Image 1: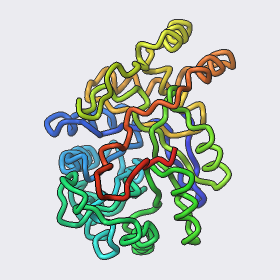
Image 2 (image 1 turned 180 degrees about the horizontal axis):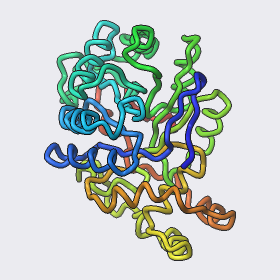
Image 3 (image 1 turned 30 degrees about the vertical axis):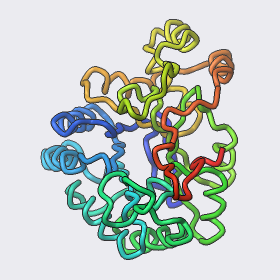
Length: 316
């Protein structure tokens, strides 16, 4: 499997387990299955509402001794209601408590969006938001840098940041993000963003690599295209004796990005990791490149409200 190497030499396995949408009653088992079957990369977030259950899995697996904490890369994310500088480290400490860990390998600013601290989950009105003039990205980033200096996290980065947002943040800091986690799949290949990140030594992780078909109905569009049912993906899968999901995961890994497919099914968890064993040839890659249609499954439209400043969150 490919690994992403950070400036200090730390290495991240490209294929990890995502935990978004994993139910509380299932995620502990899923993480244990993953860790006991070779996964060394687990992706979490405070807003997923299941970090305590993920932490239970870490506690049980690490106490058994077969898998060591230092061999597992754990990512989590700062939610939007903790962007003020005085709120960042307390939010991080709550995540560490829930995950039963002393440090994170990577901590990401989940969105370039700021909510007021009292907002739980998602806002109900424009009054629940801070503008980025009121709470600039640089303020949040400065507190994340402080968390790194304190040893609470080893690496820091962002999620759902466009090129303009990255440029804005990088203009205000000497410490550029080490990771940008964004939606990536053959329908949304984001070549320009990947090129920018590569030139600026920012690693990229792709989420929703299989199309996120199990996300809430309110986040879905009518008649949205299915990656897993795409004829080209299925043809390539048949050619390699793989599943469509494995081809989609391999495509991300082979491009040099990390990828975090989510599953709570034991066979699927194992199958996803086995994607690393395949190799797409030039013809496969050319055919997949032709599938790009700039289609987002996670549109970010849920942040847009009359009276707030969050329009076109991705700047595209």
